Amino acid sequence: MELRHLRYFVAVAEDLHFSRAAERLNIATPTLSAQIRALESMLGVQLFIRSTRGVTLTEAGQRVLEEARLTLSQADRTMLVGRHAARGEVGSIALGYIFGPSVGGVVSGALAEFRKSHPHVSFALQKIETLPQLRAIADGTLDAGFMRTPSKYPSELAGFVVDTQELWLAVPCDHPLAAANVIAPDQLADEPFLAHPIEHELFLSGNGVAVSAPEGARRVSRVSDIISALILVGSGAGLTVVPKSVTQVGMAGVTYRRIGGKPRTADYVVVYRKAERSPAIKAFIAMLRARQRRAAAPGVAALPVHSAAAERRRVAT
Image 1 (cartoon, rainbow, N blue to C red):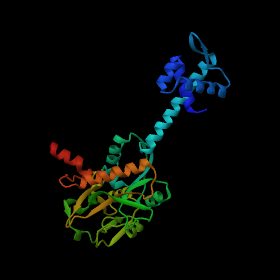
Image 2 (tube, helix red, strand yellow; image 1 turned 90 degrees about the horizontal axis):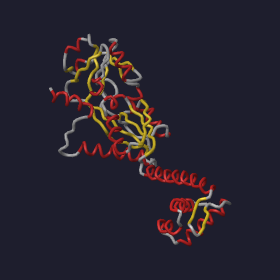
Image 3 (tube, helix red, strand yellow; image 1 turned 120 degrees about the vertical axis):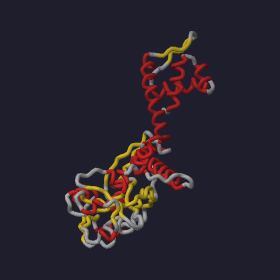
Image 4 (tube, rainbow, N blue to C red; image 1 turned 90 degrees about the vertical axis):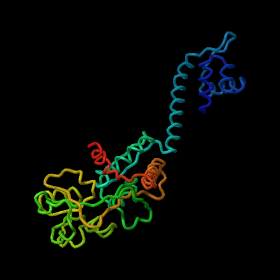
């Protein structure tokens, strides 16, 4: 039995007339009659009572009609889901992120834009540091991730920059340096610094300050993540470097100050598998590329995501 047998049967059952049903189906009446007889033979039951006065459904035909409609409806839904999946319009994406681009709105902004065109794609989010993210994407545990720029991508992965942020200092509120709006680098030589684990410093790119402490810092302690660093800053244990977006985070005992001299920045990238086959993931990466091209286009105001809200507040006042 094929779906066409059920479609022919439902058409006749609805019209109770072979010729009209055949015309609606765009087939010859004898062909339709033969297909209905074939269906009755396959089921081993009579579906219609044919007489000179017309066509009526048998009791068995009534029951089969209910099931046929359900079957056809599910088949149509299956075809629709398949088409949507092939275009990346349904599915799920396991996405990793680190704190900097997430608090600045890079991650939420990207998801919001993608949801407009792909409302049936869901995201499973996981906060995870850069190096574990790279491993998870390579082994398939994650599909893509927002992270610091690695000095080199593993052979099966690729990525591109989605955000660049100026780097600031997180300083204890009662520290003498907190009195200055801008802190000169030479003021930091003797300050204790809280830095990311040493493997970040070894394997992530940047200008030193992006992943560790400013050049010339003599006393460095390692912490596991940026929140831990801020907690320790608030306790007076030292200073740490943060992307500008993190300055929006209120942490007891912590204030944020600009670093003087040449601006120091950190790039953040989205990383994905080169041989990705999922249409939904490929559509998400394509959207991020288009988003980045728009931001880099001549004449487009390059207002960073993390400062957009602050700029709106400034204009309003």
